[in-house]
Image (cartoon, rainbow, N blue to C red; front, top):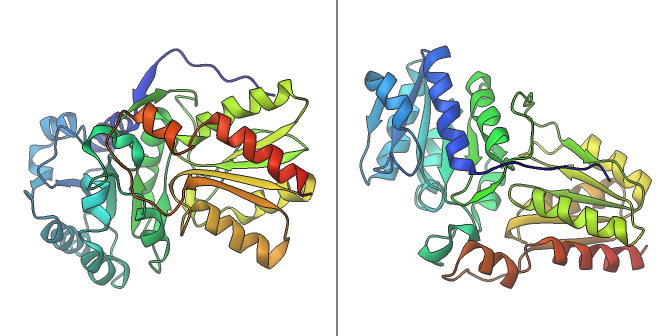
Length: 317
């Protein structure tokens, strides 16, 4: 098992803010829009350096998407920012009509996704957003794993022509990826090569998959771990090549089981190489108030649950 360590923890939304600050210097056509959540989205540095390239839309998310679409038509690269719940569910119609159907070059960048929003509770803990955005024709869906990868993804999508849904979170998590990493949209990152089981993880669950891999190694199980930061388009080649070696898969995500990464992997395998699969995610329920750590444990989004799923799926081979 390849060893991963970290010296600090940072929130992924700060990675977005750092990426935006750099884009403010390198990409004069990048503009930022926000729905009254500047501090939460870490946009202060971008706004300070580029006050004329920021639009405060207020608590009017649907209008913000329309403004972003108009700015994209005018040749800008707009980043429309808010909480994930408001940037997906509340504005689904506007995204469908003005962004996806129209093919406008809008980047929807959303924070506070998933259960790890924590104490704000079920009404704000969006767990269906990946499913909604995956279903949208022409939409690219990205869910990075740590501060550095979020920063790299934020910068990479500026040069990508087309609608993007970029999802990140509020809690501090280990920073374990390279500071100067390349970010290729649609290209999975091989975290650890193995032969016994494939673990496919995204977002905050990538670190939990690494911890699970270390526990499995102690039990004599050699896990191949893949970071799927781009859920759509899915890296079919990487997943199928891994499964050809291991013969079974565990998927892990901070999202509903329905419509998320697990569903995408199951669709791929059913068409190409049916093998046993176990899914880690939220099973047909809303969240609740609690600390991020409490919620991840209660809903089974942790290393222990991944280890249990690996043992179960390997018994089905």
